[in-house]
Image (cartoon, rainbow, N blue to C red):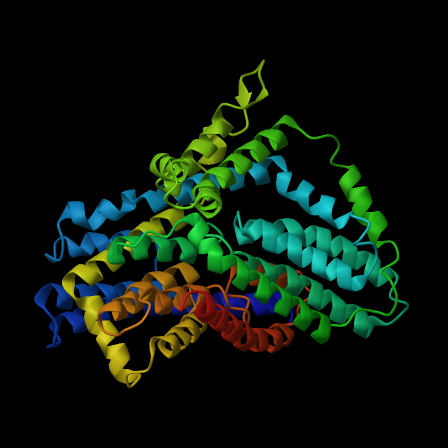
Length: 498
């Protein structure tokens, strides 16, 4: 199908989905409101709000952040919560961790620090012109950068570099177009999929991670530090990355021999960067300060013991990652790039371009999740899940939750999926024995493992738009990775946390 016609079909589908959602959302809201549900009155009315929110999030009838604001606002006239309680979650410390990490990532992108890091690694001698090592290096860079910044921005930055390498491949494929196309598909998918699994490693890697951290603290009263998350997130990310690399190398083989000229092209791109700029240096300082403040309490407790006076002092002055993120980001507004003109590493005009929509989406989800707990709605839903699963052990409920989130994320925002499922699976804490966090963490991981469709994640969409990834090839690889990565992530999570 021609590109223009395919785009038209896609636009028609979106218009139909949006229009249907505009009418279906209010209908579901009214239906749930009048049905005689076996719930407390506040939980019953909140269920109607959830119905509207779910339909609007799936259909994207209105922008996702607008729905995140609409949901809590509706609970006030319905008598579910006071205005203060409905909106207090928008001031949660995790919100400021989001904000600080977005500001730092924005500065890195603004000054080209992310591109310099990528080209530095790709130009190393060990990468050379080996197709396997180039594939691995592209994936490793994408995964590492996605640990700290938006996977969308990382993919967008890596894409032109990858296309440049593929241009060299095409010129030196020796006429073997089939294998050349296969390797091109694999390289593009390696970039996107590595961004998806790389974001699992840290709390700031992807919004669902912070949603889980915030809800565990808000709803279970258990704080999960940056270091705590990396204790299981990093090993899972590494295992999944290796699996993705092996699958891409197996499914999409490279042409025989080396990619002659690829190393030269990469070195030429790196040479255009010139010397380090003041903006790059300032961005690097802010990034390193943030990582240090986020991980220092955990490393101190590991090295000295959690009861050591120094560890206790560090934990007392750095009790939460939110203030640390803001302190590190604030450096960007005082580190100069041109002192004479009083120009600093980040201006407010640049800062205002961060993803405020995701921040609002997280705040709305945290608000609705908190109310689901306080009204008893989450407990009722959790009991229903246990009844439906026949009293399965929590480890198996976690596996079901992971794949449920995985399937939902293939068709809707992973942030919206986490907002809907994490509080429900956290509610299983009161209904079953075992580690209360296990099902919720499994759901969170499932939100990052959508590999099948372009609409599943922005990285998938970006590489699909490159023209090197046929849809059926993405679906083929995605199904295998959805199953394989899901089982691996669940197994490592149970081994470490369960």
